[in-house]
Image (cartoon, rainbow, N blue to C red; front, side, top):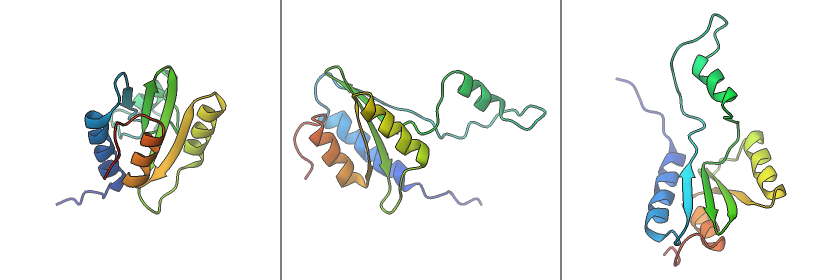
Length: 129
């Protein structure tokens, strides 16, 4: 019997998505970018994952935030982390690039901070209790 790896960030993201479905402001466009999924598949003779190489050629980039938002012509990106975890250098670079381009991006550890950020950005109606 195999043990499943604990994925606390998935639970946080799932809860954030529930809040977005219920409390998202009108006109909000949002989605998850499945950057880190294990794709499996075939390998070339050098041992490189073929699907990974294809995705890279199609524009998949390291460090893209977990959730992307568009609201009232403004771009937002939110990286979610479990308590005690921090973003990678690539994730921090993506956040910096979004902010430098005039968007709004940050990372949050835990559900409460993520919801507070989305409320501060005006993407959620009401306040989390």
